[in-house]
Image 1 (cartoon, helix red, strand yellow):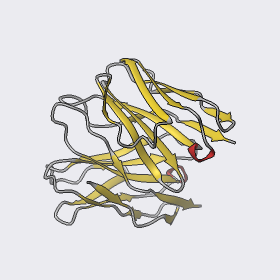
Image 2: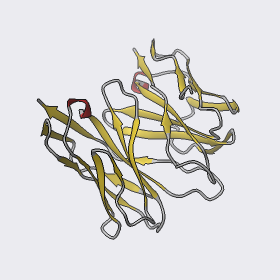
Image 3: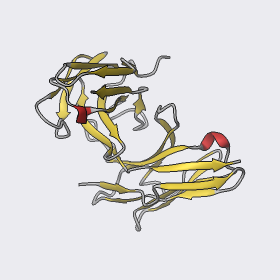
Image 4: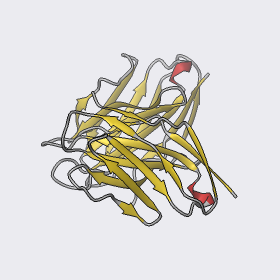
Length: 117
Length: 116
């Protein structure tokens, strides 16, 4: 079974600084999707960034970027120029590609990010 | 365009009572998921449907839990009888299934259940 591990229960960063959140996963599949979701205090889960395993290029979305190391099964999230609104729980998630049907997302336990002014 | 809609947002009930949580997925999404979130266990998948058919219910804790999806625009998660350990936030999420979409799950705002 696939598992997702986030080894940092909590992280903190100073406003305008850069922070990296770690995620590792275990799978025997060669093709899959990886995601980072953000959950602010409002508890709404919001997609931050996604990566297809077959793509070697790391995904980027404005201040958010990933470091995808397929051989190491590592998928870290870098937040640049941190803002107070980035404070939230961040969840790493894994999903197999679908073959004629849907497939579930497996989530890590989450990392609570605090942004200090 | 409306997102995933869940109701109620908050529910407080007493042990032994029946609880029904409701979800309306995004129009056009053919896959629907029910997740439970607690501090101890994080996000757990309870069950998911594809084209209204339950595909994987291995995460349903026990027979007290049941889920239905009578049509493409509505699903329910029922707990009967409820117990204090069922207290959690229950999320419904939907996405476009295989062959389309980006693989992204769209979540509702969750239903916070407290069982006294």
